[in-house]
Length: 191
Image (cartoon, rainbow, N blue to C red; front, side, top):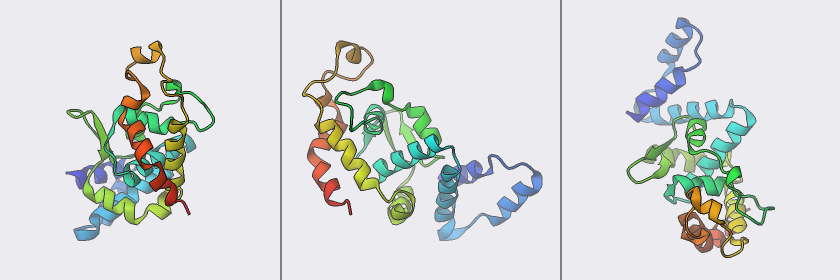
């Protein structure tokens, strides 16, 4: 059903019956159908306002290049990292619903496991093949996010942060653990 959903998403914004008809006639079939649908989704992302486009491309970069299964909060934390701020600032965390919306159907939330991921394994394959086109600086972005978390004091979360669900300590978050273990790998991939 993913392909059908991507095709339906591509119909959004069409202004006439003729435009819809032309779109339906141009939809790819067969083995290239997914690539064409992903290309269309990425072009829709490219057409968004700057902040939404940047949010989508950063989220897709993290989900593609880390191969880490993010919780909703961990993805918000990773995308909200500020290299020049010595503290975690929850006010800088993008909302998970905004992230998913900006990603034009390429990202889904699994409510049972409270995780966020790419919509399908073919999404991963497409984005890996086309990474240099859509987010060529992904490894630098991920390295900077990892290093920003490594530069925090050992327990930067206040009691107020606990109240909004940020956990007992920053180290309890999978993203922070991932940062500790993998920043060097991502840094070594930066050209």
